[in-house]
Length: 293
Image (cartoon, rainbow, N blue to C red; front, side, top):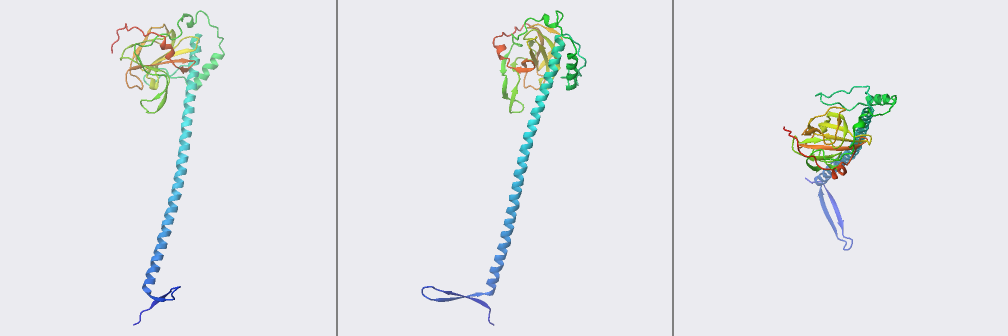
């Protein structure tokens, strides 16, 4: 039986020799199948690569949108923090004006869950208070609390200790990233007496979030105030006149702290300023007090 096959003729261009190659039909079929298989595989690979490229493009777009949303979220958080600071300054200024001229405030501040501190006035309370103050004729006299204040510039260390953290940018010990430190930290043993850095009037006392238990003093018409935070106890009451060097509390670990210390701030019209210039020329208080845990 004769087998069918293909004949491939090869001719040499120089010598003129002719060579015949017999190619069986099944070889042609195998080659055709291989070519078809290769085409299918190639199309599949190209399709997969196209899908992968499309997904990569979509992923990059989603990542860009995520970064944009995160940046927008950070901006909104920063704006919210600035608004909160402005509202807090508004409330503090209203309280300072009220205390300075002996005006009774037209609203009562709410207390926190443990009943120890007064919360910062809300926006509508601050607006109501300012509306009230605009209607009052402010005429200070000898009956004003400021009449009794003399040393209204911070001129003594609030606690006998050492400076452990400075004012300004620092690495947050809890978040592990850069943060603004609005005051200085003065390390001292638990229970060490804390004194007023200057004559002043107690404007706020109680718990304030990460500050823990704190006392805030307004020092006079110069716009200076001071804050003493992370206290274990406070020995003053709101609107009490305090003399420089008078004990107002003791060092503790309240709020967000890693160890016992005093967080000390000096503010000008509600804005934190560096307390170091006041500490540099001041003397530390004498430890004459018998305070126990």
